[in-house]
Length: 349
Image (tube, rainbow, N blue to C red):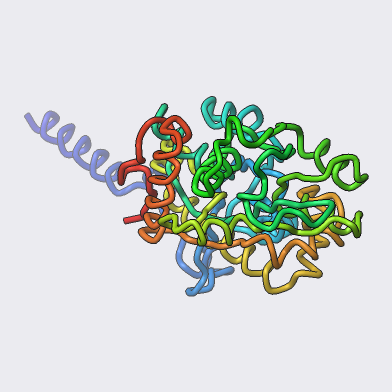
């Protein structure tokens, strides 16, 4: 019994010593003291906040007045001074170069004639009106002095461009308002902008209808050609409702839903760009030439005062509905068969 008791005491002593011995440190070490922490050695400034990352936007623009206002935005984009990052597609034919790419999702935001925008919305619902950017820019030019009103075009041949857009429908409407039948009283020859500009500048034809800046080019190249009728004036004189509004910018519906912040940034950057071009015509014209929107800066600078560039966004865009009513009365299919409803207008919440 004494031997057994001695053995038990010895075993208890061994276990007690083992419990007091050193233990292995766990595999994951605890966080070092603040004085040893890398963050403590290089503390971040309390006021520093992450810079916003821009969104990649595929932007479609048109040569001529609807594209001119974006030239400063393109320069700022190249300089890395815009919130968004823009990849630009520049075209001259909205129906074949811009609309298909909006439908396929290759473009996110694009400039279009206002009737094409309404047509696309009514037929597909894939776009929303983002901003109005161009009022009337159409002019009747004459190599002579016989036409002073649209009524004077009776029995004449008129060369024109952009069949199937605002150009055709406004001309038809205004001719009708002046007592003429566009089908029988005037021989309208539809050609490309390059062809009509060349024919008029060389004196091979006597009458044409061109928008600024193509009209500006002709007037600069041929001193015998005069600005016979400004269709913006003819619009007002006809008593037509609404404002003659030719150009706009649309956004793909899906893109606007997914990237509202990017859309808001675009609108801010675009408005700034338009105002810069209007207020700085010489520098703006150089940018317009640089980006191929108008071939020559001298033409662009002369055209800027006549280009009627505007920036109208939000609920104010609904003022165009009266203009759409005029186009609808002239030809319902010109805007896709109906006046666009309120969902057509992109108004940020």
